[in-house]
Image 1 (cartoon, rainbow, N blue to C red):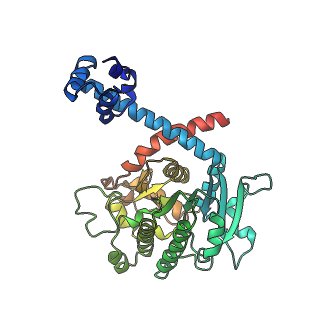
Image 2 (image 1 turned 90 degrees about the vertical axis):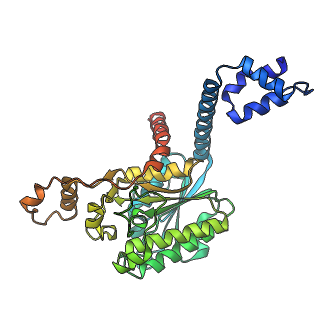
Image 3 (image 1 turned 180 degrees about the horizontal axis):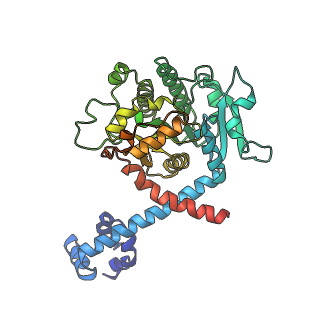
Length: 383
């Protein structure tokens, strides 16, 4: 009996399903029968429900602790690639990753019609000779070999699509462009042995455009996809492009055995937001359906890094931190988008309707809690 009970202190940090095997095999001579082993457990352990509760709780705590240690180790040793770093999100990712200790390969568009200054306008203040952990690559998403070169030696990729400089607006032809670019990048990742994880930036517009978005009793979440035919019918080119591109990426990732997560972002509330943003096509319908959501740049950056560092992350994550479902919210956004436009009629300002939120980001919030705590500790240590 002593041989079995010598593991007693360890049982509280062991998952419950392992407790049985610990007791059965703890005696080298196997002189205790299954019946006697059960008798030993009942006589020497506390109330079974209490025991299992503490065993499970401590096991989960140790798992979280181990995950945090792995994240800190990954930050200190990993090289990651950010593509495309020439945009607002990409450049912010580069800056935050450098602050967390990563070596970063920042990929910017080749710029056939523009000089290097244009390509690096968002990286001002980050690119400097003293920053030895940053390497800038000029690449074309349709040039497979240039992508391979940028990924060489990287353990992860943060991929966000920026429209080509000679085709900056979304239209019916952008879908093919974005799909081909994503296919090239994912294929290059599959051919790069060092790549462990891909964080793929998608959009809420790949989720919300469905015929049943108002009739479905449950909130929209990661399980829902926009209807491509509906997008074509109403010329929702941004939704169509994001939907088909993300589906292409997932199909290729599963076929090639790539570990991938996607961040489906709401409307990015950054300095570059304008009325021409293709996300805004259909904004009135999203607003009335309780599906018009926005995300701050810092929160979006944190969500990408969290999804990369968290070993338990999987699948899709809807990313937003504000819902526009009140008239005052809609009015504030309208004034930001068109500051020179005349004020709305008095009847609009008196409108008190609040549309019920019908979209959920609970899955992302669960993994962001621990990440934000860890980020605060890192900032305090660097201060």
